[in-house]
Length: 339
Image (cartoon, rainbow, N blue to C red; front, side, top):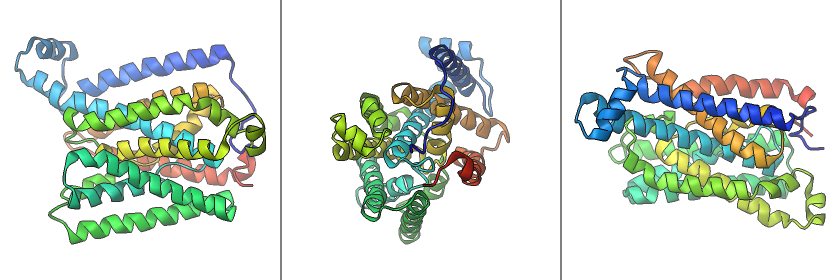
């Protein structure tokens, strides 16, 4: 039985309407993100001054603080959400997510390692991808070799995440002068991000999203079961490996500039399935929009709730994600998460 299935499927009209509403909400969230904060901007005035080249304070805040931060939130939310959908589909486990099974931790450990021994910004996204991929393949290998149940798989991911986090903490202690700002990296957030720093990760994310959308049909076949997928001509092992690689590329790219932002890849896929159904040709774009919306709104709240002080967005998402994860565990009999 497909553990990710639900009883009701939305109609095409419902899906179209919900996608439209989510897009409008995302536009509103972006407008709020660039306008609101410790200093409130008149968006149209700031835009006019920025386009005309007027070096006003509002234009500088918009171009060098708000715009990069909003772009970072959009990229991070989309990447982690789609990564979560892919991992849950490949592992057939509704509890899987980039931070739950150690993918984020693997990317974070690799980023700190490269920051120490190859301190060049160009290496960071590639290192994050490789770290995320190795962690994901390790968890996937455990699932394949041992035939582990879904709880065992999640526990293995938590254990691997703990080991990698311990490694990251060790690097921070041994090389404190080389990993400045590591505490903010562990919390996750977008403070200080620049458009220049987003160029390489954005390329990784756009490539990853395009690849994920192209594999939507194959992921649909995987959810039918391995034997059925093979009988329909799908190369199951290769497809699974490529999907894990794409999920790792997306998560690693997000971690490279956002730090260890958690639970986006767990919360959004569940919400997207409820809104858009289980056809990954619709689910993946819907999750990308939903993830961008969630992270943008949470980052805005993290800036305005305690202004002029700022709460790292990773903390706010953990407050949301922790109870959500517990709710999934408590609903195991009803939703049949465990086989």
